[in-house]
Image (cartoon, rainbow over all chains, first blue to last red; front, side, top):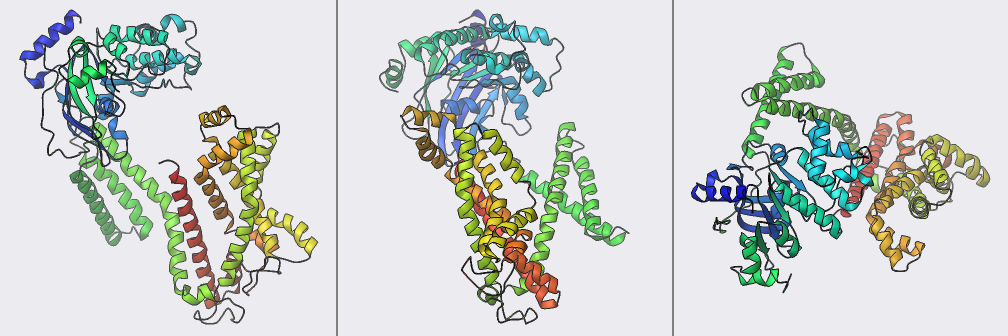
Length: 273
Length: 352
């Protein structure tokens, strides 16, 4: 953990919960129609940290992460309960614009999804165009974002090639660069490496660590090694056939060496799931 | 270390949808619309603005003004939103209006003739001017169904096979086949009728349901083939790969993997084709002509059909004959409506 994040976390311990800087859920539930998918998750994501969401398939991790930037509501029949606070403000409050929430809380998906009709450069700048942001230093943005996503060296000579011409790993890093261009405060990643080769996975993990110096990262992963490598905190989700719930959340080292719950210990040691 | 989780009670939590427009706001919007409606009504009554269209134009203008007034205090974004809502709703209503007008007038004028005898009797023993209690259109309904069924039986395999050729086989003639199918969909229906007239009707020296069905098949084929192609294109490449990787040959993959995947889509293709031709009149005038006796043999000379029935009785022009024609239009509309509803239902099943 970096010095900055330590100081932030100490500050929040003494402060009121409403003043918590970062992302926080309080008693969050999610439904798909009648199906209760996620029950009562209260979890904090301090600023400039990486939190890994782990747990077996179908335990509500992806549902939970989509709740954090209002992507959940796109599914017909979806419903939720509880609060999701970003820097103390409820992102589900009636006067809040969902598009602005998603501008601040970006997302990278499991399957790389660069826009196929756009060049690499246009892909990086697409968020700025789509959200109508006023930026004049386009070249600079393209270079910094691609550099931060660890892709600059590989594509700097072919920025006008189609985004679809890249390999899977490169495409995913392009998607990360695209998310960074709109300068989000939080980046949500839903199994970003599940379709990638080890080399690309390593690059994305390096990118995540660099990102954590400036923004908050939440990452869903099925890869225990990955969770232990990149995350500062880990949250373990589980389901007993009913809705998914949070078993425990703590510093990653504690989760992997000395978790409070025996089921967490079994899971991280690979005994089930 | 900070506590990352604060325990909360899970009991008594109700699902909520905070992203939806709250009920109170919806009622407010409806209230505004009703107010604009009443106001527009008053304008029509009190001033020179007249008629339904005058009311509609006034209503539209008033809704725009009210949308602006209502959102004056909230902000530019909400104002733009409610203005666009009014404009889009008005556009939707405008697009809907002709349909409503057609269906409304057919329903009003055809309703009186729609009685049991209309669906059970033919016109062989009734003259067109008889009271509507006598005679009916069963011969036309049966004739239409007979021809459409034959046309479907001919067209469906051809259409699906050409779809398969275009998407699965992708042979050397793909471009040509696609071109021919596309230009066939531009063939005027009277030309299809003439084609069958100069070939089948001349050769057999008689009008018949079979000739009519062939003319309809010419018109139906492009619709079915193109819809089938579009539907088959939607099958993910992975499924074909999976079939091939199990050692299946191309035709078995096509018929046992690809086609079952889009079975409901192909049903939609067939129904769309039927709906396309069931109301065709011109080609039938040249191929099946018309008749007032109920018959089931497709080769037995001229036969009645709903479109030619409507055409013929409208031309007679007397009160009861015209009423019969309107009822025929209504029956035809209902049949097409049922077919499209079926297509929608079956087409939606794939998505699940």
